[in-house]
Amino acid sequence: NAGVTQTPKFQVLKTGQSMTLQCAQDMNHNSMYWYRQDPGMGLRLIYYSASEGTTDKGEVPNGYNVSRLNKREFSLRLESAAPSQTSVYFCASRGQVYEQYFGPGTRLTVT
Amino acid sequence: ILNVEQSPQSLHVQEGDSTNFTCSFPSSNFYALHWYRWETAKSPEALFVMTLNGDEKKKGRISATLNTKEGYSYLYIKGSQPEDSATYLCAFIGTGTASKLTFGTGTRLQVTL
Image 1 (cartoon, rainbow over the protein chains, first blue to last red):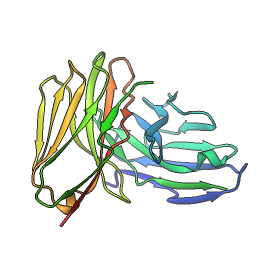
Image 2: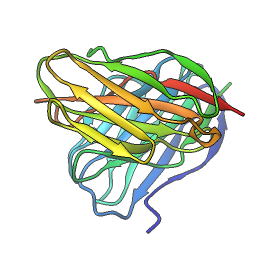
Image 3: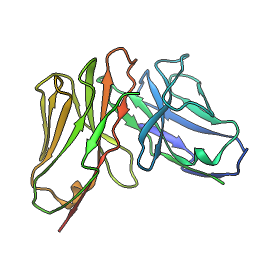
């Protein structure tokens, strides 16, 4: 089992560019999450999907959109990147006792 | 926004020392408390999932306790080793929050020889 995979690992964007971060899990989990990690801020929830076909906003959703393509895949889209979106992005899926299984992260820099 | 606080922010101990850190969380509407270990350049990994007041969990030299009435959890490491160096995160889940976790900012532990 690969667990949770994310692509790309690194990305540099210019202000105003768009991109999609991809995430997939092979553990047959219903719930999936997108977090961002900033120094001194901890992990903050951007969006989550409790099940296929549903998505909900987390703590910091502005500037992002998500798609739960199927049970395996949950993508995060930045429509018009801003320097404030420079961060490390983690995708996660939720296990049976609500524990999170994290992907390896995407380090995004917006210049 | 829920307040989940961890202390200290960072800790530097010698190999063999025992140490502990604290996670404080809202004492109302408690559902679960998680501890994660996060090594540099890796992803967080779940250590413990705690749901009952008075819960004690243990994994090797690492253990955790939970007090839901007063809203705190302690993580203990006995006989710290360099490989214990990591950031330790706690995460709170409240009832009725649709399984959303609120993370603390973590305690960064460095163990030196």
